[in-house]
Image (cartoon, rainbow, N blue to C red; front, top):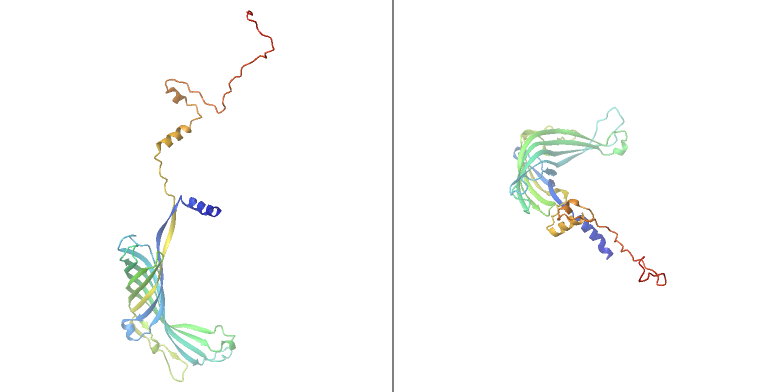
Length: 315
């Protein structure tokens, strides 16, 4: 019996209010394959793998079969890398550098966009196809990392490696996505899409155009080309639906029992002298009730052996 007391108390305490879930948008994370297109593909700019993050607002209108969302999207990709080893460093006025170095050259891409999404299903559907419109900018960067092969023998150097940006291009991009989401439950959905963005001409340097002459320590980056910067992304990821809980007290239902109401009304005044109510009842005078019962007077009796009045005693 004691085990049932606590659940019963919780049930009674929570029966007076309810909770309502309200959609507050969604957050998505996914992985993609980055494939250069158009002139960027013609110069054999290297492919890469990356990550994308996005946020979307709640749907407008909420339960319509065709609804709209606003949000933002960020994506980046790490393309291929290429190493050049046994680089002999030039000596400066400082201490002698012991050992040689390695140069790693690579390409990476970064994009930031405003997104508008149109969904073609309401909240109750498990499968939702959609299209998105994107507008923002995309960066293409070729970088170089020079690392000492024996950093422990060169403690006086400030860093073991030095990163430099060699070629950098930032261009306006616009495009869109076509995709579908599959709802696993109320909070999590799987998502896949294909994204294509168009970009204006900019400098791009494929890894194959980075050269080093035989017997030389110099790596050359001057073989870049100016091309259109279109790109295709093949995405797959997870979307988390965000909710906010609101608590509210449901209104109590009025009672239809008139007899109970009339009883409570009269009972609330049963110990009060209502002269106005008494005057309306044929002029009768109401006598206030008392909680203490009245005692009946007891008769006075004389003992049987005491003086008695005679029959002829007229006094």
